[in-house]
Length: 111
Length: 115
Image (cartoon, rainbow over all chains, first blue to last red):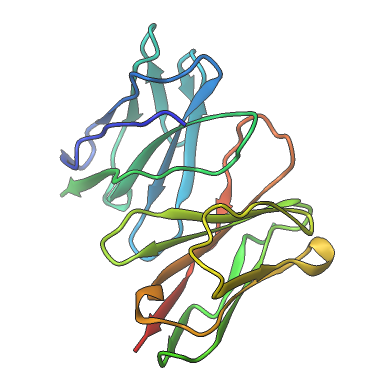
């Protein structure tokens, strides 16, 4: 699976949009971009995933660059409950189904 | 729909003892995974079941760890004998088979402390 690079930490004001970047320059054509988050003392939580088109669901939006070498997770109106570690993971649909977690980005939402 | 349930939520045991962790996946999920995070490290994959069969156990650290999933329902992860470095949080996750990229559902984890 391709490796990802994320900033170790970010801050965002409550009510503002949180934009979390991820670089995955070695991503292969059959690999998806997944985002998970882990809120303190809980298990990781699936947020969103995409292949090459931008995606949106009730939790977030995912913007993938045209060359697919980077992506941005957008939390449109961040709340204090969004404080968590956010993981960007790339993996193929076929083959090994395990998730390879990196260090992630520790996002702190400030009141 | 009930989520992924793990038991116990916390366990404190002495070095050399045996501990068994249990995971109940979401009903109907054929795929079951174990992960763990040891102190200060990243979350690491341990193994993957498809129904009762081990699909990938490449992440199991050594033969002190034994995972089972009899009948393809709940799974247990036994550590025998436990060592200090086994301390950490053990997560279980489940997913349906062949669903296009849908995320796994994780349990809240079992925090294991070996003293």
